[in-house]
Image (cartoon, rainbow, N blue to C red; front, side, top):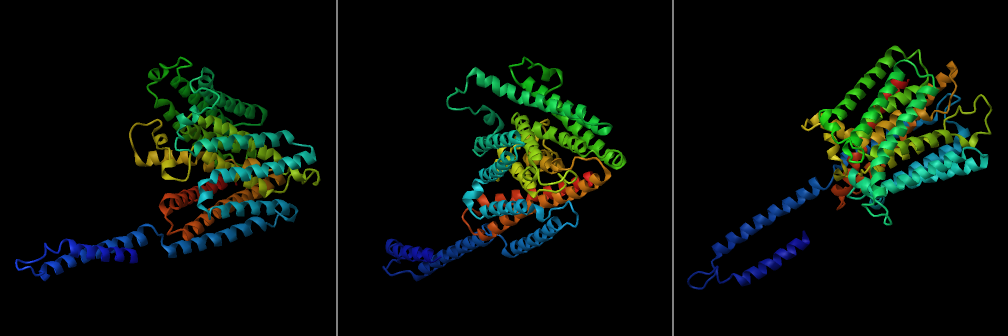
Length: 503
């Protein structure tokens, strides 16, 4: 404002010299009436623009400090309560001093990631930071697997999947991260129109769907999958087949271009997948209410729920969705197999896998973050894939399109991550005591997952509070804050639903 005042004084002096002959009467004397009126008008304009500047500064580019401090305090209190509930269990299979190294490493990784949000540069590279931390945990697991001479193949596969996700994040963080451009990216030594690359782009998504169908079929045949759980899993296989059929009909490679006209248009298959998913979720809810005491196989229940929810996520994510789902499946399988690899020879046979390692939960959380950025999203409103809201529909209905956009945005990073978390349970026994231990471990895992998510949002609130008058507050910090808050809210809601389903 001082600089503006100086500019105004200079302008007033220049004005008095340049227009003095205009404001004189017929006798050559200054007309004080005209001069005072014009000065009053200029002062009025100056007062107006000063008020506009103050309004823009205090209301439009600055958050309410009192509300920010209140929200920050609430989250800190909730973090303390959740941490006490997580790390001070009174059960012998809860997190205890025997896993102090894993707990310390978990705390260290969470703090590093939280502190990275205090820098706008790290916020812009959030996906790469999460991928780096995930690769660090993978190297730690590889070290233990080499020392124990076990699970070395899984450790190498996990690092390979992390490297693939790192490449996908580099593509997804560009402004050209649409699905078609994601699929059409190619190395510099391959021509974009090379036939081999064209065939790979068309075949790879469908081949990934076929592999996912095969995995579900093997799961059904090699486990005691009966009743509604089996029918739900078969329904997921049907949805996968319909998705592959839709993509094949959109390609000129398979000669199925006329299939869409025969089936009534391109909206019929997506709508069928949506209806199938709703029926599957209804069957799972019915099975939970009426058959919960008959089937205590947690793996089958988790596979049924995750596969049912994955169908619309893959469909809405486009042709990259099946490949991302396959990478997610392989990385999650490696995390599950590598859980507790550092203590395999230290425990007796009965309690060999009875204790929860918090590091695997942090790995799962970091993997979900990598999936968010690898799927072509970033924490900005221009990072939303608005076209996904109209997959299967031509008309705009606010609630319906909002639900579809939410599923596409947070499908891999929140929905599948929360519902698939019980797959990391290290207990494989089906005895009544083991079932009770699983219930407590599921509670511990969801509490720890909530702590990790809440810690991230707490750091984001602190960052936005500090930078509330920053020049990039609306371009960087505010969108990051909105995405984290919406993600935390959705995570908490899904944790409650998952707890009701599993517990």
